Image (spheres, rainbow, N blue to C red):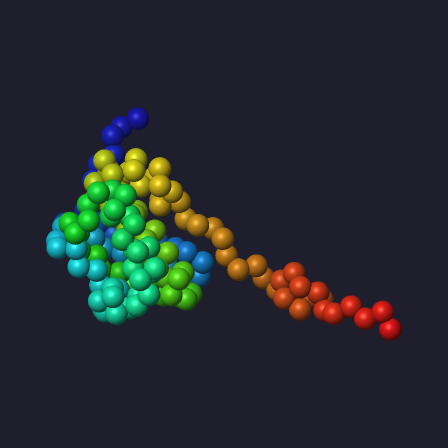
Length: 138
């Protein structure tokens, strides 16, 4: 198998899309000071909960490159939790494209796999996806 080549555009950035639940994130990374911008806002402003900020930092921690890349992301759809997961997935894919040597660590942590769990649809004759209406004997 041929070794993987780094994929970068004319600005020295790597691009990837990340998905989680109904959220889709477009993520660009380039070498920098570790500044993360989501939908034009600072990460700490957009993802106010510390848990969501931690989710976004995971790929950098696993790859051992904290504070080395600037991230610009646009994310649509879903809620904040799904959006954080989508950005994490996009960052992981972009990191692996920027530097193929990071692929092993990211893949072992399971960050390159799209989490396929989505909300189950509601069925007819049911109150929700699985919940039945209350049974009445009489």
